[in-house]
Figure (cartoon, rainbow, N blue to C red):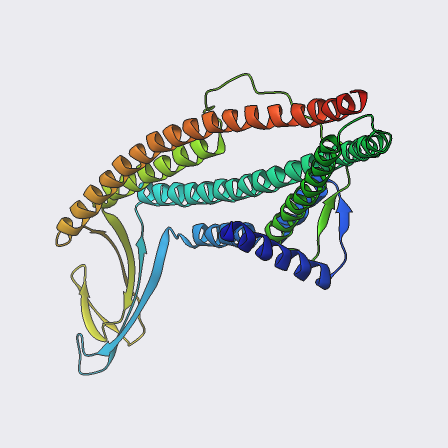
Length: 363
């Protein structure tokens, strides 16, 4: 009882806080969901992260930094000769393709995470929204019941006055009236509690009330099995695809990269060309090109370890995919139980309470 009273005080505090900060407003569920999406920090951070990953993908370069070298010194004479070199490192095109594909897969994963955030947010808000509608409708029904109970009390008082019934019947009627009043207060509290939850989830400083009055029950889903198209399954599969992409990158990291070079230099002084002695000044004119390979000869151990770690990541993601399917299936079955409970409660409120109150008057 103490815990219940403490919880009620906390709820009253939040309701009072929101009431003081601003008046309530009404909107439709779709408007609220769009508002919550725009104000939710996790969703906005995930959208910014996607933009960051897109820039990271563009930063993957086929051509690394270009090297420029100039040498001044004595190559063939006592004069100063010049030697100019330019070289370019080129990433293996296949490795470049795999890195780009992996970067794109990261973007896909993050976009699915954003979609998952939005769907979870929509689910939470929708649950509180429909509960608020239910309590709103319950209050209307209980108020009608209260009106009937008050009529029953009035009739009982008249019967006692004229000796047609015992005072005990009047006492019971008054107790029933008090119970109904208490039930109205409890339903109003639960209604306000749902509104506070909606405001917190949508990051609003004012209470948002449903602009609907009637709760329309949705048709019960026919399938009791989690679809492979569920966002949780799709996201888990994307993580698995990303792990496999990283494995390919690690596997082909052993492929050589390339190095292209060009050199131009001077040899001041006499040079024999095809048996003829010819004098050259200090102007650079002798050219050459080079082609080289960069091989992972000394870091093959680290590459091997990296590949093994990516294979372990694949195993982890496979297990997570199976666990996600198992968890979602259990959640679905639990939601079916919750659905059955709320449908029965809905039917009882609408069909049971009023009928019971009307029977009391007819007695």
